[in-house]
Length: 311
Image 1 (cartoon, one colour):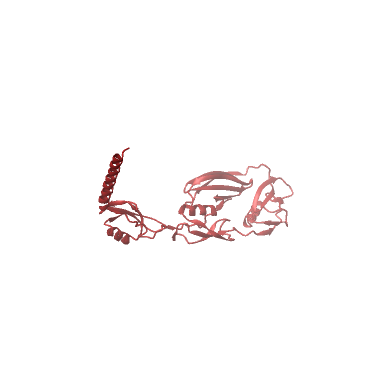
Image 2: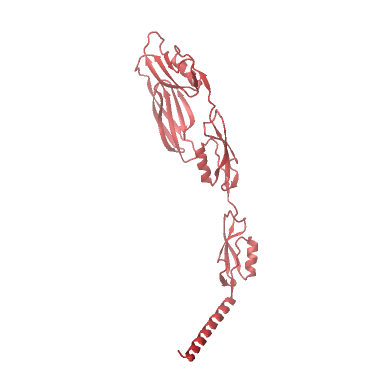
């Protein structure tokens, strides 16, 4: 390639580059760089935009845990872009940290309480105090801190006081031989002892419907909730059954669905007649076949909710 051609090519490149740089200079001369206004308070952001020949327009507010209320949390166009003077810069403004109302955990078991807190954006505190309570089943929440309905920050830990249930009580097993079964069952119920299956057996030496054998034996130590087996003087296989219907409304509050368990304790012993997952507020009607006096207990999520006696 000759020197003349080389000079023409170089000259042409210089002309093109000069033209390009001239056009860029002319265009850029009518444009400004978008400033970074994220994190600035709204008034300061407006002043910054105005100083650069731009206008700021608010397009909404959003919760932002990292920026104080009233500051810019997002902008469009982005910082560093070139725009014409007089262009509008659209911004979203922080509403600050979203506060959360603490749910009421009282009478919920620990699992339910944890779910309610998680659904609310809170968490269970690291400290869980426990205390005996005769009025609340084991594992139920008795008190909490912060209290219900107080507005707190997201992920705040809620400390709870949990029931250990009723403190175990120990008794010396009395001698029930010769006592009427109706009297015996009432006495056992008052002492929070459970009657296991009652067996009827004819015994001419004992009074009708009187206890002729028992287990545990008289004088043995038993604690509340222990099962007591009884043999009663009476005709074996006698028809002592009757029909009854239990109507129960599942309490509202807490979880949308709850496990409902119903147990029956009568002359046939202790047994479950229902163990189902039911929706809060639904009504359950359960037919029951009872043998003699009966005690029916209803548990919600494995915690005693109510008990009824059928004489």
